[in-house]
Image (tube, rainbow, N blue to C red; front, side, top):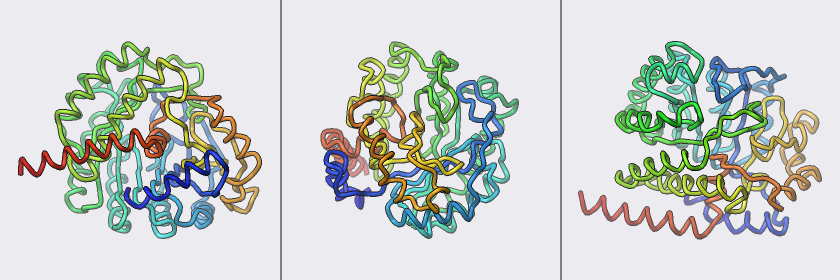
Length: 367
């Protein structure tokens, strides 16, 4: 976190003036859209692509260099890729990110445990975060995810991940819930269960229409009134549970994120400037480079430029897409990009730092 702060004014200048040109600090890669869930809130499992090979990904990582601080390996289901440990370790050795984040649906329990241990062991200087998807309790989770017995496997995976986190100090475990029209009425039950299991972080994201997930036109996003009701409950719970260290920083940003989502749903505009296309980006399975997963505007394909990310990032097509984002021709509550956006907003950053300082004083006083 500390190492990215000096870069904030540089990214602000890049967004406003186009100089200095910088590579993104937040990178999400989708090795494959393949998924063994058939979620009601996501149709990515229907997709098939000519996926980049591990060797091709390593070439991409070399072109990114040391720029990415936050590295997310997404999907589909990331652990369907038998080489996910090679990808993560390759990103670690080449890019040296501070954070490697991987979500999972928990279905491949044994493989997940084996791969996560390999990644945590071989990426000791990165914070490895494994986020376990939880959209309901018991059969409600199975129904939304489209896989009978998924909740039981979630519990097995959670137990395995907690055991590994005791073995590897750089491993953190999160529970991640997508709040949609399918579980909005059961959200408080999910919160009760999530906090009771004491993960390193319990996080939520609102279901949204994304090109990447093939969910455009689906009625999955809750109305603002319903969302506000449950998210206010979550905010109250988080505020009553002070966190210290990196957890305190992430939870403080998360509280601000929930407030932003509430505003975006009502105001239907970028309530803070968006840095997707400047400080954050996504690389899709076939090599397309996007500013984010919601718009999924293809800047260029990496296979067409010998896997040189800089050629794509500094292209005229990329500049065209950036102009559209700058002019607020889009808005969304995409969590991954939102955290980068908040980092570049001094008002939010100051609020977060103040909350972290207060929490630190509280913990020292209690101790």
